Length: 309
Length: 259
Image (cartoon, rainbow over all chains, first blue to last red; front, side, top):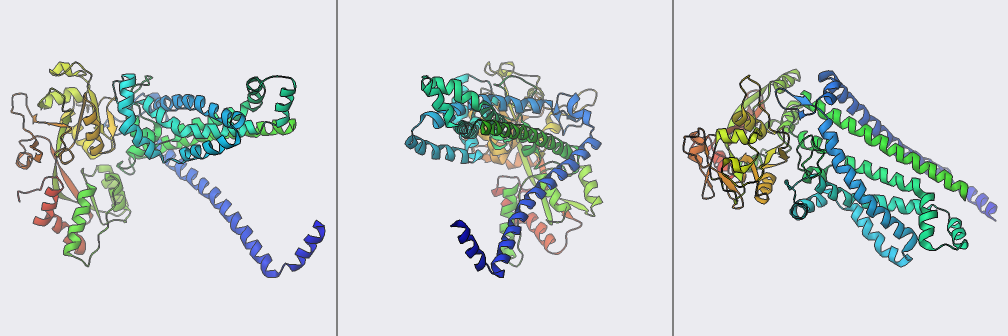
């Protein structure tokens, strides 16, 4: 039956429609290629400027010192306080949002009824689409005073506040990746466990989560990558002091906020200008590696689960 | 400075409807970059060009010419609840170099001082470092302490200090004059001098800033590529005219001459 349909369809194809089909195909191919090309060009440009930084300043300057004073006469370009600042916001944010996001993901995939899920999911999607500047503004205007009273912090704007802000955008990422990972677990595993007589929670804990653990961890890693790369929230609420500190209640300066805050007024062609490109390239490489790792983990899990099916 | 530039452009186009002026903001660096790569004819910036920038411009065949167009008073602010009512240069230096860390040391409350400043590439940061911190005995430039928070604009700095009872900040006086939720401190050059307020009853103390008895002020500049001719000359002339300087005053900056 289908064969017959195909042959009659083939007869109707005219030269023109073939041409259109080809054109459409190449158009899509071109679009794909353009994005690859842009990515390559971005890499190329950043690396070019970063190499200028290495020639101008020297790579050791970025790591041997502990201070970021790019506009001082006696300039110091250490990326160390910026890395610490980035980690001090990104790690707590990832922890907070993993706790909440994974729970939410488990709930949506295993526990919630179809109807509840239909109500909750759009809300999570709205959360994911919230402009980060709105979150930053809310944290700045409302959150800062509230958290200062709650935690009795010396500085109003600090790493913890930024971490709370960041976790708002990480929760949707982590929860939806957790849900995807759990859903990818074949249903026969669940059925088999029920057949063995265990209850739902034991099944989730002992069967589903272990099977999906690599997907869940990929979600956490991806969330961490997003936290490192986020700019607006940290720029607005982290306090922006490039202090060498491990205290989460102090103001910190992240790599992203440094670039966003300083690039606007930097003297073009100065070592400071190139230094900003260097730390940008550094950030790009780190997030690239993080994304690659989580992609690899997801891919491995998919293969494993396919085998089970 | 972008708001001032916008108002200048509006005022100029009212007089010369045949000429259209487009204004873009983004900071001094953006202005210089666009002057150098030819996308703009005039760059208004709040600091003098650095030697490195002049060299870079010359390499690209651009000859930046400086025009002084207005004056800006730099004020120091604290939270209204702060007990301090005036401050001297040497106290400011002690606070902003991180030597004095508690308000108690200078007869305030027993609380840590929270320092607010601007981005390290901004003109205000540079000006304040030069005029307040200066150099130590061996001639090395003194830096702000690393725990100073940098804010992206003077308006957000005012907002932060208004909410932080232990905060202190600095910036263009125009951003502070009309606010009642912050306290603008009178400043004295020497401890023995009388401290001069940059703002009296929500209006800027123009005379004191212009004649230098208020010790913290700086010029604002326009840069053109070469000696301005034609439309550019008309524009610079307009800025320096009575009308242009009236706009300066209305935007809470300080006109070069008494109008």
